[in-house]
Each structure stands twice: as structure tokens, then as C-alpha cells.
Length: 338
Ligand code: CP3
Image (tube, rainbow, N blue to C red; front, side, top):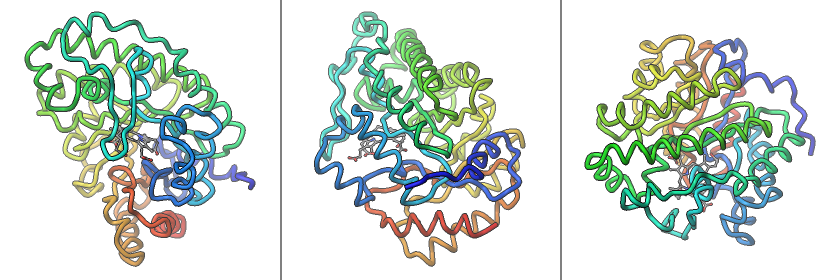
């Protein structure tokens, strides 16, 4: 199937520059996923890790939403936790239990002994990107986790990472610095291979008290943004991003990806017009009826009408039991509106 749609290529990049005067671009976090029968069929044959590691499969899955939904951007099919392999840690995804990292980091000594990251272990990601670039005419979004969120998985969860950070902040910063350096190298590899946009998923950061967010997240996000902003636009996402939007804006990313908690217009009124805003339909809306989806999507579009920095997305990823037709109705509504 031809994916040639060159006139739409610039929509996302224009919106990220806050210079889009056409209809807003639309894509969805977790747009290639379990809600798609086509994805489920692939997963019946291959484990999740095989899908992430095999460039042919990762390419095929990344392209599913381009063909089935006609979205304006592709996001690399991978996971924020793949990076732990660069430190020689083992990563598994266990059905029903989510990601498991082995060994979990518990002591300061383990942090000290963590080897320098070996990016060769992630080379398959560069191969996937190169393969995708030959097929795609919409921009390709690369991504990584925010250092704090990756650290929380490496340490066995949010509660454990908070306990460690409050007890031994110095060791916490040592770990975050190591993850930061690996993340910068990994994102650099993605940009060199052809990603035109980067999104940082610091999912857990927004759940910290503001002071801890300032202490354990801001510096690291800022370093990532500063390193890449001149080369490619950088989007920052956290859960709780509507409430933390002003603090995220201080990091000066090109775009903030907002959760669904506040109306976007309300957030827009306090954020610089130079920062693009992405979001923020509640993913649960996509599990309701098609008329309701159309109504809520039109409300969002009306609210943000003619905002040159607006990118239509959800407040978080598509939920597993969302009917494909509902997601298609969401994308169609955006494309018809302008
Ligand atoms: O947006 C996309 O479609 C790109 C691919 C992508 C995945 N994970 C694929 C995935 C992205 C951007 C992520 C990000 C991610 N991964 C985050 C940050 C965003 C967020 O949701 O807050 C986090 C915290 C993770 C870690 C992770 N990976 C968890 C907690 C789980 C298990 C629960 C879940 O959400 O499914 C995963 C597994 C995972 N990541 C799957 C996929 C497609 C598995 C689903 C399946 O079984 O097919």
C-alpha cells in the first residue's frame, strides 16, 4: 500500500514549531497496541520482546496505525525500558504482571557497580528506524523514558525509588546521572538513524511532590531538552502534566503532552505561545460510543481552534479494550473538522 501523503508530512512539525495554520495533526500514544486485532494476531506468533527486538516486526507494527488509522505521525514500536539492556540488566515482560527487571537495584553498591552503558545492545532500534524511514512519509517519533521513571522501574517501583531517593539522595543522583548519559546516547542514536521528533515519557515524575520533582526530575529533563532541541523538537509527557504544566514549561521543551485533568484551553492561558501543547482526550472516552467520541473530540477541537501549536492526542495511551472503529472515528473527526 502506498503511504505517500507528502502534503501532511509537515503538519506535526509545523505544530511543534507553533506555526501550523492548517488542521491540527493527530496521533495517539500507544497507537499500535493490544486494541488492534492485527497487532493481537502478530502477538499470537511472537513474544513482546521479539516484537521489540526484531526490526522487521517492529517496523510492521509501527506501520499498522499509519495504514489503519491514517494518523499524522508514527511512533517507534519499542518500550522505555529497553534501555536497561544497555546496562547489562535483564528485561522481561510477563503476561498480566508488566515489565520485570533483573536484578533490581537495591543498594548504593549496585549503583556504583553498574557498568557503562553499551549502546551496541540497542542497535536493532537503529535498524528499525532506518527501515521505517524507507516506508514512511509522516514524521517518525523516537522516544525514551525520563531518567526518574526509568530509575523507578530499575529499583522495583515508585514506592521503593522514593524511599531510596529520600534516604540517600546522593546515590539517587548518581543513578539518575548514569541513566541520563545512557538516554542521551540512545536518543542520539535514534536521531542519527532518522527520528524527526523525540518524546520523553517521564510518566511517574508528575506524581511526586513538587519539591521532589524539582530535585530528581527537572535537571535531567532539562539536560535532555537542551541537548536535542536545536536538532529536533522535544515533547515532554508526565502523568499529572496538566497540574504541573507551568513547571514543565520552565524546562522549555518544544511541546508539553497534557493528561486529561484540565481543559487544554485553561492550561494554554498560562503557557508561553512558543510551546506547543499535545493532548488531551481522556482515553476512556474512546471506550464509549462513536457519537460521544465525535462530540468530545469536536469540543476539544473547538476549544483549541486555530491554536498553531495544538497537536491532537489522548491524555495517556489507548486502553487495551478500545474498539478499533472508535479510534478511527476519533482520527476522522479531527480530519473533518477544519
Ligand atoms: O506509543 C507507542 O505505541 C509506542 C510504544 C510504547 C510502548 N510503551 C509499547 C509497549 C511506548 C511509548 C511505551 C512507553 C512506556 N512503557 C511507558 C511510558 C508511558 C506510560 O504509559 O506511562 C511506561 C511506563 C512503560 C513501561 C511498560 N511497558 C509497562 C508498565 C508495560 C505493561 C503495561 C502496559 O501498559 O501494557 C509495558 C508493556 C508495553 N509497552 C507493551 C507495549 C506495546 C505491551 C502491551 C502488549 O502486551 O502488547
